[in-house]
Length: 73
Image 1 (cartoon, rainbow, N blue to C red):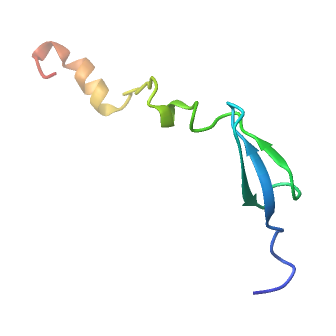
Image 2 (image 1 turned 60 degrees about the vertical axis):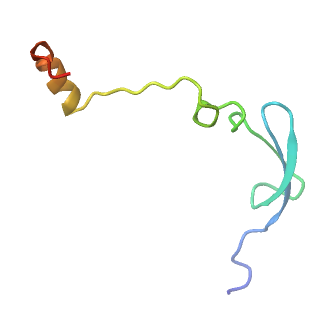
């Protein structure tokens, strides 16, 4: 590998939205930096299984709307 082309890899502290912290290694910031997350696995619906909205706006939805009176549902 070439020398002096790779970013510095050091320890940082990650703070989740509920205040819990953990230390990991990253190229983010300077050594000892604190990364505060706005969204994390403990609060985001993608990980918690919270309410989700699925919008069907494709061709199948148009077909169903057009022929909904024919019992094709």
